[in-house]
Length: 405
Image 1: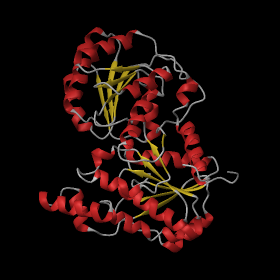
Image 2: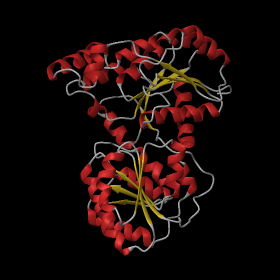
Image 3: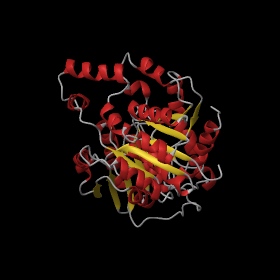
Image 4: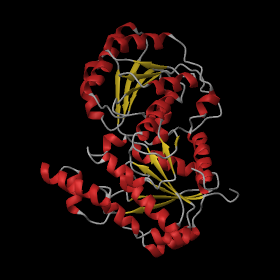
């Protein structure tokens, strides 16, 4: 469209939240804004007690905004103490199930306090921004409730994004009932082929895979030998037994390797990693870091000799697969990975090694440390970047706005 799109993106997580749940819509919002589209990123406040921007001020700010960046509209939840306690396990077993079940049954979600806080901004977005499309991501159903409510008021279509496993997040007995309430979504975007297959069980809409990516590079990674051989473990641990296999494999491999080795971790599970990494004391340097800013994390991943992550079998697809393959550094996934992830790694020319056991970790380290880095196909790699996937997303928006599905 000649003057760009006007779109509202609805995501529960504030863009400054240090969690992967904030990454997908924030990244796409920034790419589309840089391409001349006007994007409002509609979220909850970073903290529940952060002050709400006034409706009047929001109207003024929308009129004077620099649209080369997304307009972030954070809204605090309305107080709902019982619901808030139920979500975090603060009620007894029976009471918790009753509160959450009733909220799903009668209001289609369990973050209705955020939904109520958001509704006060619908009229100003309708009149001052006039969205052409609304895109809401399922981290919880209230993001869809907000997206649908705003789209209804503005007379525009809305698209439901599925980035989490529907049947894993919805209570047993509610998945089919609640899914039927979103039949008015004009289209669905999904996080991966695995998410599409899962969503097909519950939703009849046409679906398009839009991967969460990475910042593309116009040059292939330069093969280099780091000053130290750094093994970087990134992200959530999920399973201490898998972590033990990784640490054990490293411990078995170290005596046969002559160079200095650093075992690093970056993420929110530093204490869990630190406890098990004690068995590496005296064998290599141990470098445990907290959650890093995105650019800092990417720089560390590029500078590492091997990137490692713990695969969560309950996850249909993990963003870390693409993120870690992009620097052109060999990647170890424990325990194993999906066929989809393996196929993408092969397409990109990346090196993804799947390890189920301690011995397999040791063997993978021996192979990686003896071989040259893989040659990544920069064009095929960049097909999975934020920028390339944003192009696919824009085409979907344009088609739906034009009346397609």
